[in-house]
Structure formats: structure tokens, C-alpha cells
Length: 482
Image (cartoon, rainbow, N blue to C red; front, side, top):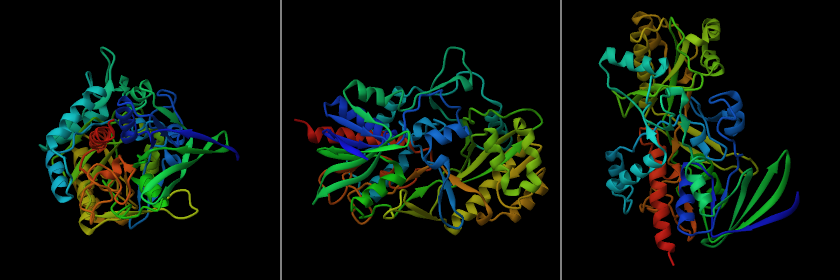
């Protein structure tokens, strides 16, 4: 490595996703000298095809394939780029349920956590991100979920997204209002700086205070050392990387012990006519059985269709050539199980494990069966469930056979919603940070991302992450004023 480059700042923010970007904007606009460190690259929107293998390579950690070990193991994805997961996810937006916020407030002793205040912040976020429903025609893949649920009499609705649409545009012509289009430019306009392609290796400490950071900057395979001195550090690396960073810093109290996710199982459904929209996902979700089970549409790029068929390739593989007629859907559950995130000395990424309860495994089976029923009601000719030795489902009799053959241990279980690895609250028996993200036992180390959510919220969590991050950032500014 070459001689170290050095930076100074008031506040070092680690990560630039939904938590880091919003935090940076609030702090920079309040006059703090903010430096953002981002391990991934800055990738301009439109330079990669959405949900493609190229995007996975450039904007996801480990090419989009990481696994929480368990029975079954759960595959998960992490954004690794400027803007984090907001650059690569579907952009579907759910406010946190008010009942969930109230439960967290009392159960975890979170001060100054009025649900009305958080929902007011949600309204600000919705304006900033142009959260709205599709102004024109929906895609065929979206309409399938709506049609099947309606025929069963099951509650469903269109979920808004953070998108802007040109006048007269349809569902696939929206422009994602991610962090690189919204909160990061706001932060830069007020003087914040960002270091992309910089991995945080270590936070140095002296007693209760963090004193600096050691980074590695990598470009075209060449690495150099970077150091940063700061007054305060706010870790926003996501629910997997944040606890690993804290553990490597020697902060372990309630850190990484309560990973919560929304486990999902999937199927591919084949119809008579082309329905596949590779660059988009369904904007309808079925909430008849929420919060325990929810149904939605998944990315259906041809490569992902092939992946969805691999659990029984002998019987399903021939369908891959008809991929324009196939779309992928998921059933997600709110899990009782929990996982662990453990930083391992000398290993780049942490070890992640997750344990599903019997109730979780049963719900996954129920969810897959009900999702297949939605597909049949919507007119699917064939349904291909994603578990080993699964049968092709063409009618209700096949559905009964599928249900009897299902076992969670045979399923391809995955998730894109990860949280709760440094839960917030004044109850130190349960929580890693105080009510505003200050890590217990420290004076200047904060967390402000999905790791803070005490439990999985039962809906897409990024609205919850952004609202809580803005709340905490404003509290920080009030305490550091003057």
C-alpha cells in the first residue's frame, strides 16, 4: 500500500443507503462537516439493466448471493454501492404500521417515539421521494396478482413507489428516486463529502470514545490506506455490516444477536400469453393474511426465471425457453425466529445464521400453497414451486399434492428485508443502543439504519428506516447545536 491519505470531519457516516444518506442530509444542512464512507462504487442509474446479472455484479455484495446458514439456509441480498439498497430494490413504499410503532415504544422503552411524529416524517419522505402509484397501465405481471386475489375475495392493493413518471408514462417508464437522486445530492449541496470504494477496516477507540477510522481505498485492484479523524461516528452499514463493524470495534452488548428478517418462498407461474416484464416488478401485494403472510411479485429477469426453476430442473427446466410467459411471485412471512451476525477475526464478511421456528416453517408452507391458489385463479397454466422435487401444479388436485410434499428444509428460502441487529431503546437488557441510536457504553458511536428496528415490521422496512434515521439525526443536531 502507498502512504496513508488522511481526512478530518465533524461526523463520519459509514454507509450511504436509506439510513446513511438521510442522516448525512440532515446533519450537513445543520452545518456539520460530514464525510460519508461507502464501500461500493457510484453507479449512475440507467448504466445497468434493472435486476440483471450485471447489476448484481456492480451493485450488490458478493454478486447478490449471500447466505444465512440454518435449516433451511436463507439467501439474502445486500446493496453495495452509493445509495445502498435504495438503488437496487423495487422501491415499493410502506409506512410503518402505527400499532407496530406503539409496540416497539412500550416493549423496548423507546423515548420520544410518538407514532404521530414518525408518520409526519414519513409524509416529508414521501414528498422528497415522489412516492406515488403508477399513473398509467399496470404491467401484466402486476395484474395477475390483483386478478387472482380478487377472484378469491382476498384483500389486495397497489403499493406506491418512490418514482417520478413523465407525462403519459406507463409502469416501466418511471425514474427511481433513490438516495443518489434525492438525499445524497441534498447532503452534497450543504458541503457533505463522499468517499466511494472505501472499505472501513477498523474504528479506533479510547475508553468510551471512538477516535478515528482506518479504511482501504481500492481502485482497479490497487489498494491504499486512508485514515479519518472525527468528533462522532454514525454507523449505517445495514443490518449485517453494522453489527460486524461494532463487534470489530469491541462493542458487543446486544449487538448482532437478534437478526430479524421476512423469510420468503417463491414460485414461477406460466400463462398462455407473454406476461414477463424483466425490468420491473408487480406493484400489487396481497395482504389478506397480513401480518403473518403477504404475497407480492418478484424480479423476473430471464436469469432469475432460470434460477427459480432449478429446484426441480428435471421436470421444470424445459419451461425456461418460454420465459416470456413466466413471472415469479413470493410469499413472505413475519418470522418468530431470529438470527446471529458474528464478525470472525481475519474474515472479510461476518458469519450469519438464522433459525426458523416450527410456526415459521408451517407458515412458509401455507403461504406457498395460498400463493399457488392465487396463480391458478388468475389463469396460470402451470405453477413451478421453488422447492426440491416439487410437482408441477396445474389444478387444485396438484395443489393438494404440492402441499403434502412441501417442507421448509427443501425450499429455496430467501429475504431482502434484514433488520434488528442493534435494536434501539433504553431497556439495556434488550437493546444495543439508546432511544436515539447512541451505542450503550459509548459517548460518540451511533447507529442509524435498519439495525435499529427492534423487530421486523411486517412490511417493506425502508420507510421505517428513513423516518427513524431522520428523527435521530434531528435529535443529534439539537444536542450538538452551538
